[in-house]
Length: 142
Image (cartoon, rainbow, N blue to C red; front, side, top):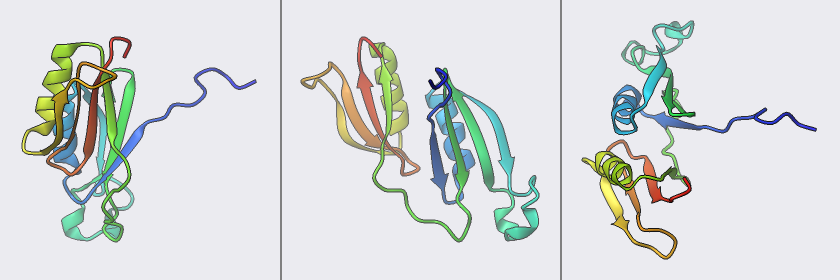
């Protein structure tokens, strides 16, 4: 029988040179804490990337409550845009739902304003200024 909590699932986001700015933004919006950030220059891979890429992020770890979001500036030869996903956030506090939605949507694009739906009082969708899609959901049991 598998151990309980033997696995954790977290999102890893890829960026094209603006990972540090994105994670500093998420740290504020999500009231998180960057626990670790490593640039290519600080790693054994420094000589494998161009001079202008050395200060880009090889790995970042953001703690958000009990959850984690990791990310990196994609290897310069692998800069495909992300497709087919949304980061989903679930809140059980109306004020926090609204605060985070507004913060993430700043300089982004709202695709569905926060509104009442058949399953909840507050649901909305947006793409932030870094191109990451988000779904924000309120649930009393989040």
